[in-house]
Amino acid sequence: MKQILIIDDDENLGQLLTQYLERYDMQAHVALTPSKGFELLKKLKPDLLILDVMLPEKDGFEICREIRAKSSIFGQLPILMLTAHAGVTDRIVGLELGADDYLPKPFEPRELVARIHNILRRSSDDNSLREIKNINGLEVDSSRREVKLDSEVLDLTTMEYELLILFMQFPNKTFTRDELMNRLRGIDAELFSRAVDTLVSRLRHKLNDTSKTPRFIKTVWGRGYTFVGEQI
Image (cartoon, rainbow, N blue to C red; front, side, top):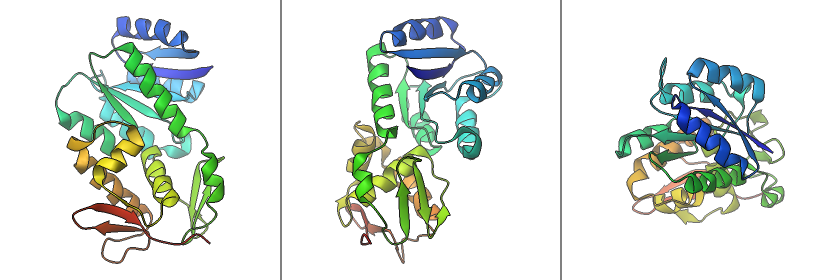
């Protein structure tokens, strides 16, 4: 049974989701405050975190940032953020901080379950990765979800990892920004080109790569991005 942690100060919503997720073989644990949430994070080591943006003590963005900054403690924990704001800004900020998906309130519980399943599916081992041995010094250990560059372990967020694997699986293929977001999330990405650019920029930085002299990720002006390199 998958363990889901919900950090949301709406107690009624927490109870509703706990009962609903049980139907889909998921056990939910609810924390009404960030401090209690971090206690449960360390104790439960959940499979996924549902994180509200508007919270007492500190907001969801700060919590997401802290979790991603402490990957040695929390690992590559999948994070689905909830926002009560209809605007695009909050959603983009969450994605840029390393959240795996967002869902605006109010939402249908069935959509939440679908998004959880999608995130967990992406986070599971991909058998096709076993065919990837070494590309330009990049090595992937799919069982650990670990990536090494020149024998050094990279500290990647879940989204950075997924983006890199997508690139490595399709070397020399040019992806548009919309294609990248749809491949990673399965949602319309028209309004999120900025988030894609930021994600690519972060990944490039961790790969010690530059747009001027790309070792891995090349910008195809007017089209998108492509992964350069040959499998060894």
